[in-house]
Image 1 (spheres, rainbow, N blue to C red):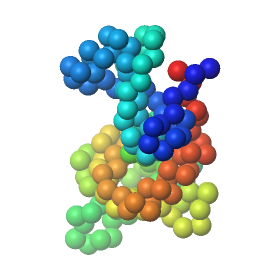
Image 2 (image 1 turned 90 degrees about the vertical axis):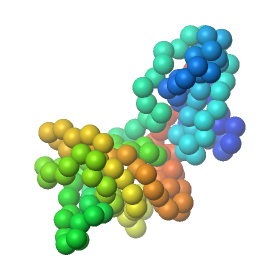
Image 3 (image 1 turned 45 degrees about the horizontal axis):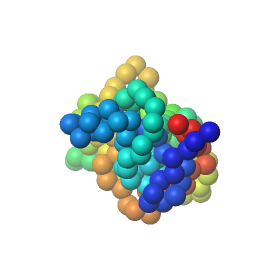
Image 4 (image 1 turned 120 degrees about the vertical axis):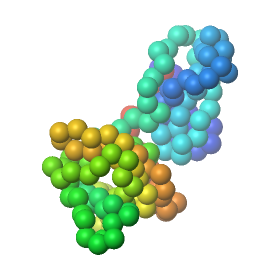
Length: 164
Ligand SMILES: [Zn+2]
């Protein structure tokens, strides 16, 4: 089976990335496809020699069960805390199961408690991108580099090596 290592960090945790724009379409007709490293976010192209469907997501999410707290950034009282369970996770987003309400587009801070570490992981900036009966979807927008590295180590343990 063939895998596609990341040219920047060397991991095999890479996946086919969505094709955008004219260049990607032209390259795609030659089966040269974009890939996204799941651990360092590097995007690169590789010749595959076989046709592949265009995927929707840049990042695979891994299933987890971590206690999480979400706080709106622009909350004058600084007392609103949405508590829930982080149910899936990638380098760029997550889903939080909760029955508390929080509006679409709301900018938040996220703190969660992975089983792998004693200290929680903090995401300074995230935005509410989806809502459903079970909870909310967040997209991460800003991170301390050290926190991103800790998150990357969790994903390294849990993501599959994609064969292509
Ligand atoms: Zn990489």
